[in-house]
Length: 71
Image (cartoon, rainbow, N blue to C red; front, side, top):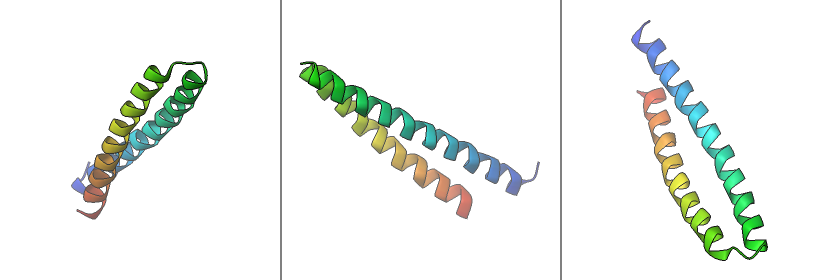
């Protein structure tokens, strides 16, 4: 496999991880809303804090994807 092919494969894999992370974030957000509606505000707040971490990691994945695709 050439270096270019490896870069494309890496960028594609990172893109798939990012897409999965977005799906997980959407599910956690929906669950947090439901938990809050059931009176679990502390648990819902904890889920929202976890979402902030996912957002931070999403940006890191985006940066890595851009680096691999451009480089």
